[in-house]
Length: 376
Picture 1 (tube, rainbow, N blue to C red):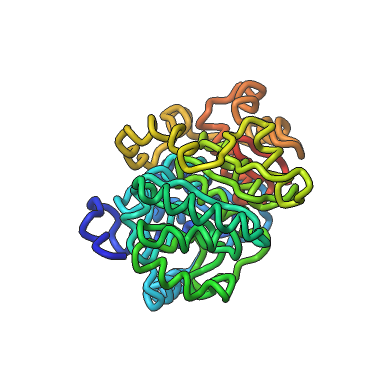
Picture 2 (cartoon, one colour; picture 1 turned 90 degrees about the horizontal axis):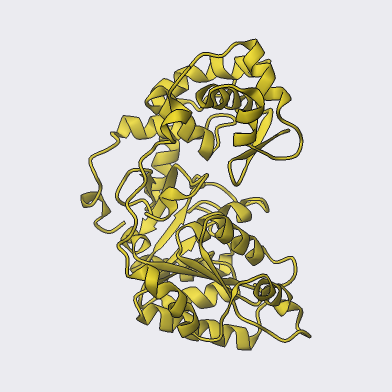
């Protein structure tokens, strides 16, 4: 990244950053649990020490896998060789809007000039198998939005994504990767990725040697929407991954825009449905700007502190087997709101959160958007 080290707040030492990475790469520690662990124990090093006992209390019958120090060191060295730098919550280089997203990545690997990621952004996503008309429209949209000061975010996929990035190069664009910097996908966009780094940035939550799997693309999509003020969808079929990005945008409180298309074109089925569901019908860049201008007049939001509401991390700290059973019995295979678990158990929020941490580290629950959890 160009000049980002000078803009960071004093924060994590190199050893602390290694501890963050070790905790994040340890078994069953997702972004939400990472945040809760660091808040509860005061730091990643202290949380690492607590993992064995917490996972055992949650019901794991074998030792939990904790990421070794040398493994974390090798990961950071591999990233450095690729020109990717780790940026964590609380550092000035971390995209400000993403810091407030539920389940946002505690650590990102970034290359290029990450300062663009703290300028106002709008995402443009759509079909990989786009039409010539769709490509032309995206080129105009991205260029005109860029000329108004907006950075264009997308996912580096072929089709609409690639067209949006290409048209936004002059004004800055951010590509969110589904894999690591060492395995850019698709291969046909490797040259485009290099051009993006000259005026924008590549970011990912994945290790540098990570090869993207099918389930990693939805994970990437939550970051695309999370860093943006809104998401513009151009040509999306009924089961398009772009609709997943739009769903994340709604969950994160972002605006959703959709370009209409012919009812006879399968590539317009998803976008037409979004419009019926309330997305802003979008024909030109002005349709997007009309909605976003009031927001863009505000200063960028501050980077969120690494904290949960006080009553979730303070209060009674200990729980016994009876408390654990109450929490477990309140859960089922369908996602349930944590607030509902609180009401049904009568336990303090801090006690419920500790029980959920134990169960997650034992691989017995799954977290869902909207502060919901379910049994696995």
